[in-house]
Length: 233
Ligand code: SAH
Image 1 (cartoon, rainbow, N blue to C red):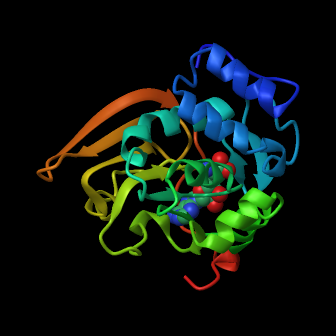
Image 2: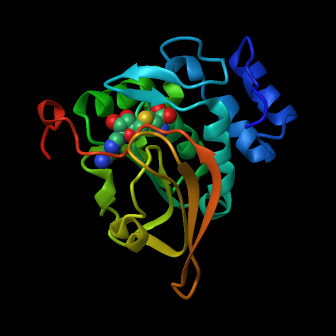
């Protein structure tokens, strides 16, 4: 992205992203204002840059979160009961923002392959009463598993899939789990962090899949879990 939108507070950060047109929808802006990034980023939460969260993972930069949400928005709204998958949920920040958007009957499932990060995301959400309410209502859940296989609950698939780590390919299971219509936002590229691009994968009402390559990015890779941290995999 061409510019940064750092601020001294959550409100300032979100307002700056709005001013810089990184957030264009007032609905998205309202959702970002509801989630204090300080609960999710261990340092400099209002800086528009990624931050390390341990286990080789990072909380993505705010402008990337904003872009991901805006790109998926029409599949998250206007249904009051959208179902959204957030693969590589990490800090849990985006999972929380998505939950503010899906509506009361909606569900967001965050998937992590490292147990400590699954717990981190859930723990971060528990820091605010709003986050706690979303967890206890069941609107948000954090699962442990290999996100390359998606998540088969609910079995009918997902209106939107966000992938927060760079895949080496457009994994078939993920495309299969997209609803008609549905959209996936996924960074795809080499493991070494170079030559990665955001791809959007759209499935139309008839089930026809189309893909579009977007801008260049640098994400943590979507990999096998380190053996010592796999939990139940
Ligand atoms: N959206 C998160 C991004 C975290 S970094 C945030 O902004 O906080 C990417 C995350 O993907 C890491 O937490 C990493 O553990 C997770 N990840 C990598 N490969 C995975 C896989 N195969 N399945 C599930 N999660 C994976």
